[in-house]
Length: 431
Image 1: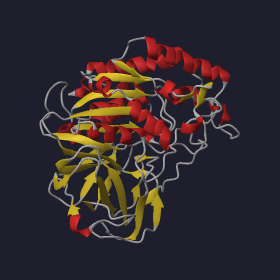
Image 2 (image 1 turned 90 degrees about the vertical axis):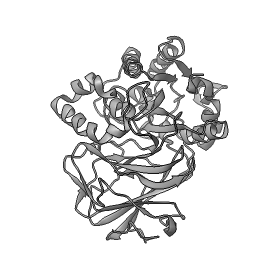
Image 3 (image 1 turned 90 degrees about the horizontal axis):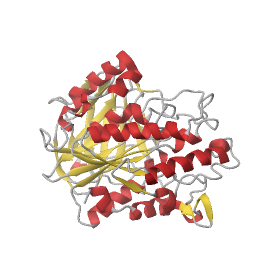
Image 4 (image 1 turned 180 degrees about the vertical axis):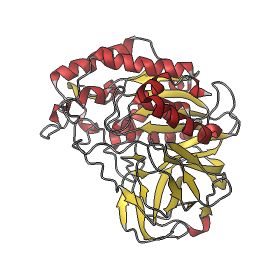
């Protein structure tokens, strides 16, 4: 299995990391395969949202997710990449310290807002039961549900939390509205009046579908830019969404795009979630049929120290490059291709705000050195130069105004679209 060399993971987390890894393995066994081999069951990840831990109160960006939900139903909409005849959902307690009880769960097709098409509601079971308990540190995979879906379909997942539940495993920025009901199990309701809405993913981490024989998955390991931050909410305009649409339109219907990005993510250190090095096994190697990893990390390693992370030392270019090399080595050890992305422009990032130190001329030099290595090292199997694609040709180092959502760091919808259009599919597919 891909988990045969978790050295960095174990060194970082010690005994607790080994316990967490052991808890994760049994639940993910159906989704893991040895490199180059067919999985034991024909499943592939068609959608993902990276779970992460709650971050500390001293960080200047509030977590903004309820600490506890009790006797509530959570309803969340996703857009899958590839289609299939059956679906399975994965609910994460990977960062929890207490068991989580799922009282009931359903999947359905959306009907707008918090509503679903009542004729499509299907109950989800876990080992034949409608309820389940998820141990701390583990994910929970459902039984297969007969639910034929076409590529790029939207699927709604609802689950009921009957007991007081600490929300410890959360994907902070979903760019999609989720709905929390008032009291009771509303999983089979065609609609309900939400008690509140939220734009984070609560516990739901993956959707799997039946895989065709030649199916494969592209996993993108990234930060807020890959997460689609600043794109139009509820519109699926992340660059990975646009890439999935391109693959379908250009004759690759069985290539899944798995977005394993997290807001504020760094290669080397935790902060806004777990570092890329620490989450690599969970976010990449636990997926089945992965053919290529796109690695788009490093910008926050340079930008966050002194801007949002208190008392955090600034890494050198060599530090960031060493971290990227580790991920490349671990990807290749799993028999998987890796494509590197350059860091994107960040001049004047968050200008006029308390985060303005995200960019400094000194940090720009570090980013330039990392990009020079990405472009020339041949350490990976290919390079996507998103840095050049998004750069203002009249002002090097700056995000082009047409692609700037306003903070001078994150692209807008047009920027995410041009990123997806610029990807060489032959490079991505190893052709």
